[in-house]
Each structure stands twice: as structure tokens, then as C-alpha cells.
Image (cartoon, rainbow, N blue to C red; front, side, top):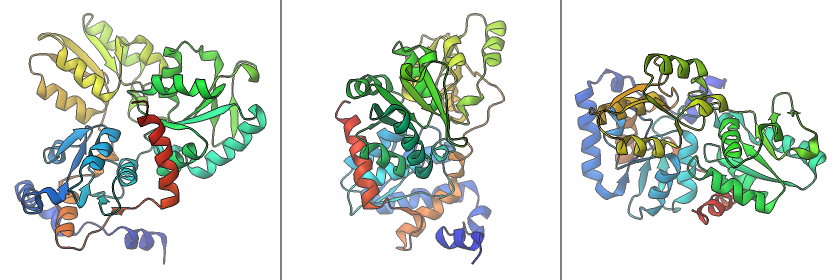
Length: 368
């Protein structure tokens, strides 16, 4: 069996006839399953989803909020997570054993989460222990695989979100002298900088070269950043900021903290997805904003606020390509196979991984 055959056996391909259906027929099929299954079905939808999918979501939010809402839903037998793989994993970790989490398209991954795998992390940890002894606490962004969350949980660390990263980094420094921040170097750097840690006291671990890049003496390193990034947010640049400043001098710029440090430094505001949404909602009519985050969300914010002038900070941005793998045909197919009792694409995190990952999540949720 070749690799393609193995992948197809593990994850069935979308039948051709779903691609041939009209948008209205697909929408009718999705709505029909939702009505017939009722409370036995729950559809959480991430903010970055396409409009054709998010219209059917029972709840909208960021990845952790949706996982928590899934866990709070005691009636749903099937949870169809309209997001990416690590989000569905978190939902599976937090939900009951008699609930099943599905991902409409198993190809919907996350390039950032994939930048830190368990083998790389274990090798890095061993090398860092040789350099720093037992002085490091690992933290991982919730945008990481279940295996990385489990690694962090096993080593007394915790998960963080873009909303609570500062709180969790403060807590981490009450536990150990240093932190290892996985997998997004930009969120880690921006968070630590906001807490007063100089950039020169931050090192970067390159998992491909297996080397620590640092400017200060080793003993002065406080933050070790994993060399990972969000492929969407890293594409916002200082040139984008300059162009907006030149063209719209009075426009406010708001960006996500997954953007590069130099972009965040030049912006007027930086915050999580929810922070951005709430900031625009609270802004006065007639105000002007350039938003540095995922394009599906920016377009939705523009449509929701016709009383404000809103643009993307980078007009050439495209939506999150992996998130966009969840589309209307895959959603309809997934729901219909569940209803027929012939489901596919279930997300099942092994118990040993789930137990340690739950420890990392619990340490964060205890401080929420």
C-alpha cells in the first residue's frame, strides 16, 4: 500500500457528487440534518471559517472557547468542529467519552502547530536541560498539537491563549527562572516584551538546526522562543503599516499578537481575535481601522460594521488556507454520514496523551 492509498484509507475522500451540488442544495442538506438531529448535534465554528460554513455554527469563537462550549454541552452526541485539527483535538480532550468529535476535512491542519512535533520537542528539552538544568517551565499556545500539550502538562507547564498569555507567563515565572514558549515565537516575544523582559534576554530555539540563538550570555536568558509562526500573521509587515500611515494618517491600526514584534510595535492596538472584534464593536461610527488578522474574519467585520471604514492591513492577504479546507461540501458530507450512522473523520486523542494534555489545560483554566 502506497502513501496515497494509506491516507485515503485513513481519511475517505469527498464523493464527487457533493462537489457537483449547488450551494442552495448543500445548504438545504446541512440545515435538514441540523433540524432532524436537533440537540444531538453541536456545530462550533471558528472565527476564521468561511461565511458558507459559519452561517450554520451553533457557537462562534476562538479555539479554546469553542472547546469549552463543546465540553459544557452535555446533550450533543456528535460535535462537528468547524476549525482545524488541533482545535478538534482540544474539544475531544475536554468532552465526555460518550461524545464524538468530528472534523469535516482531516486535511484542515495548522502550519504553526505542525512546526513543533513531539520528537523535536523532546530533543530540544534534553539539550536545554543540559544548558540550563531544571530552571525552565514549558508553556504552549493552545494552537499546538495534543502531543505538545501533553508534553507541557507532563513537565508541569500550562497552555496559554492570546487573551491570557500575559497572565500565564507571569505565573510561569513564579514557578521557574525561565520559560520555553511553544510553538509561536511572535506571541511569546510580544507577551514577554509587554511584561518588561528586554528582547536581548530572549533566545530562539531552532528545531531544524537544533541550536539556541541568543545575544546575551546564557545565564541571562529568560525566555526561550520556539522558532515557529503563523503563516497568516507573519505576512503583515512594517511596509504595510507605513503604507496605511501614508495613505490614511488618521486610521487606527489593530493587529493580532501573532504578528512580528516590529509590526506590533508600530500598531496602535494589539490583541486577541476577541479583543479585535470587541474593539471594533465599541469604536465610534465613522472611525477608520486597518486590521492585521485573518481575511475571512476581516471581511466579516467589515460587513458587520458598515458605519465604519475598515480595511485589511495587507490588502493582498488571503484567508487561512488550512482553515478554508472546511467548506460547504465537506460539511454536508460529514453531517449526512453521521446521521446515517456511517461517520468518518472522528478525532480521538489517545488516553495517555489526553490525560497529560488535560493537566496543561487545567493549569490555565484554574487561573482563568
